[in-house]
Image (cartoon, rainbow, N blue to C red; front, side):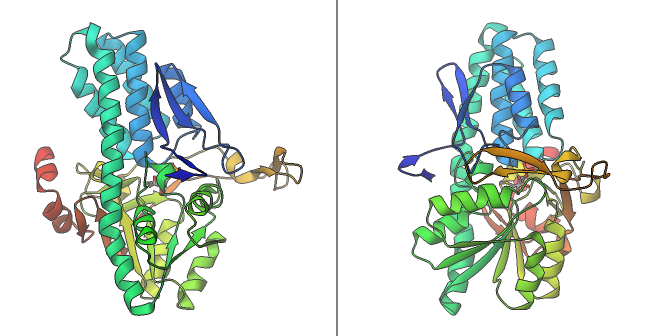
Length: 362
Ligand code: MRU
């Protein structure tokens, strides 16, 4: 997507290295990092230099290729896959991508494994762009329908499920981009998304780059706006959606779904098939990542001189807990927006769109 006058992806091959946008520096600085080793990739995923379910899948595949370049043995392959998988446990895209990369190289001669894995990662990156663009095409029909009756459409989103969370286009924001480019009057309510503020620092930044009207709100404002009739639909991404339609996403998503349900507001999750865990039927079984308490007790920003600093916002010693995701039961989800179209958030709905993928795990 557009950044100033440049068209950028979040990850790309740059010679022998993997280039990534350092998302921990946004929105204040646009910096590109280069990964050359497995350790670079593991640390980059764990520390959220790259984040967002589809993007960490592709990043994991590149990480595996970097590991194989250093050591292409079976033991190295297994070790690298385990290290990458442990970096972020909730998004199933990481497992999906690592399994796909491993299957591509497992039966190949050791001397060719690194190149094959590299090409496979590049293919996944290209496919992710096409997939997310298709999500945008399908989802923008929802926005168009509302705009045709109301003249405009107000979307509420949580966390960052834009192009920064994928290779390009995004999931929840892809329909917004498609609608805006088609001339539809769309405005986005952006949840700040504590504790890491992906809404404030990433979603608001990327919407601004595309010139899309948006308003940053505190996480607790969504319910009030829905009561006031100021939200047409909620559109979020997902880190793992079960075969029965339970949607796991950034912590706080469930509360938005409850408020939407209470106010008769439609609640959609936009996600690629690689986010569906076809082996899982109950959202309560999804592993929920717990992150460091300092993400809750401290906050980072820039001062008036542009210097970055991190400050403590609690009494020293305050005990904090930091669950990174929650699960919205399928009954609260109006529908899923996927690369193959829209479906009900249910076993039948998912099977209807993805019979081949359901069969593959049966
Ligand atoms: O912790 P993050 O920033 O990786 O969480 C990201 C989200 O929860 C996104 O909504 C999700 O990955 C879907 S992104 C296309």
